[in-house]
Amino acid sequence: MRAVRFHEHGDESVLAVEEVDRPEPAPDEVLVEVASAGVNPVDTYFREGSYEPYGLPAVPGVDAAGTAVEVGAEVEGVEVGDPVFATGLSSTMPGGYAEFVAVPDDRLAVLPDGADLVAAGAAGVAAVTAWRALVQHANLRPAETVLIHGGSGGVGHVAVQVAAATGAHTIATAAEGYHEEVAALGADAVFDYNRDDLAEAVTAATDGAGVDVVLDHRLDEYLGFDAEVAAPDCRVVGIGENDPAIGFPNSAAARGKDLRLQLMSMFNTPSLADALADVASLWGDDIEVRVAHSYDLGGAAEAQRAVLDDSFLGKLVIEP
Ligand SMILES: NC(=O)c1ccc[n+]([C@@H]2O[C@H](COP(=O)([O-])OP(=O)(O)OC[C@H]3O[C@@H](n4cnc5c(N)ncnc54)[C@H](OP(=O)(O)O)[C@@H]3O)[C@@H](O)[C@H]2O)c1
Image (cartoon, rainbow, N blue to C red; front, side):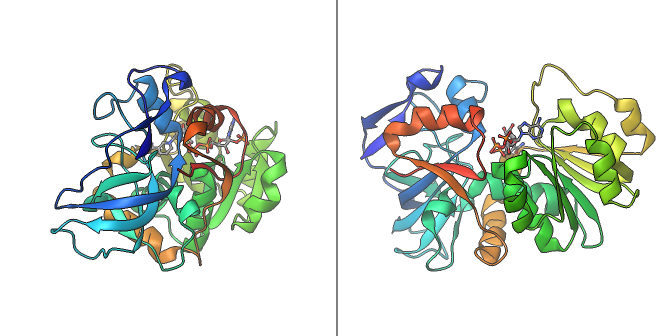
């Protein structure tokens, strides 16, 4: 089969399409014929070496979706022919940028029949992160107000939908061109993250009460801001930084409101399969994943450049 691999860490140029053996699924694995593999910022961290992949050469791709073509003897609840999606790949086993991937059953779920498998390939990291941040960590409740920074991004655009599905009052930030689409996904208010008066706008959208929950993907930039717009006892879930070297500013303001800061990695989700199954149960009705652009395997390098550098709403995918 064809797969993207890298033999050494480095920039996008280390990615190459190669002919490799089709994986043999272990008894607890499902062999998936890949329809699409989402492209995530974390794929670039594995490639660069700031995250350690399972070994070298490595097939990148934390996410994948497709059709189950072989099911290991110990796997329950998955049949040959089922549409499935997976996440948490490429850290301890080959990833999704390939024609086939063998997925352990603890990081895979069955999708509803007829699910768009190209979109599903982009769902894993984005949806499980949004789910774990807002539902599991923040325990977001319907009467509350949540602020989602970067509501047009991969995680952000699913987080807006997860928040809306809980019934919470949802405020998002996004670049000007995406406001209508982010509102259509369920945000009650969308503000340009470049506004000078962003804090005033967010606070006004809560009638002065402040936000109860924040999903922050650029903590070094926004923790002080979060404290400013927070209601007392606000829960901030931090999933990333703009520049990890800078550190967290304005921690005094955060203390002043008993702000609770929860850092997280999606890879620590106790059961990726259960979180994926929760997402699958909302698939189509409450959660849709938007695909902004698709690449073939040979476009993996360009896709990994674009995921960090370009502006788009939703996700980038690779269709092998
Ligand atoms: N901890 C975890 O488990 C976990 C899981 C998933 C992701 N992450 C991290 O979370 C971050 C986002 O991931 P992603 O997949 O959603 O990436 P993404 O698809 O690139 O989305 C990033 C979003 O941030 C927006 N943005 C850019 N500059 C901004 C600013 N100054 N203020 C607010 N928003 C801004 C972008 O909008 P424009 O492009 O339109 O400017 C884009 O919508 C990455 O750092 C990733 O590594 C962490």
